[in-house]
Length: 254
Image (cartoon, rainbow, N blue to C red; front, top):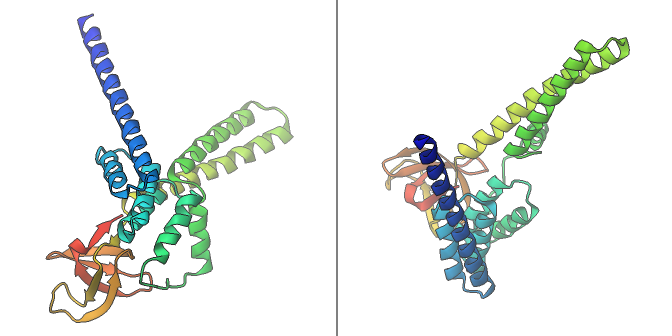
């Protein structure tokens, strides 16, 4: 009896703490929103950053913070937070539009390497839903598959048996594909190796050393892919295929 009471009290304490934290986030967000409306962008950015510092994961907060930095003329952090918002809400048209506007302010114009049409098509299919969307798709497909096979098992009519069998079979295939797509999207989000350049100007070197040969120059706000790290340097790759080494403290991971 005493153990049950203790468990209940712990649950109540945790619940109250969660409610208090949520209320605090809402209060801080309201203050940040008002600061943005009043064009006090430094105050708004500070408040939004405070929310994120509490490990509060939300596309809206990243989006609002991106808007705040963009209005303040800080391109690199605006691109960073638009990209982070887009990872959480990949189908949000407002985020997509504002990210494009921010990228238009980036000095570098790097053309992407052309991809084969079926690669582009496959990526579009995988991006049809978010990770959560594909997970729900898998749940629905599994229910349909189980229902189809159960009806097949207990149905006596030949036409119905054929229909329910094929329905269950197709749903089972869709279940497997949904699981694959959800896992693929999750891995891309968790293991995202992209970063945003924060240095005003940085020269990529042929080696992780100041003595390396100068290869190309990039500017703040550009999104690059990162790979190896060595002696405080990081290897980057541009969307046009160019590769070089830059100081690791000149970028922020997405």
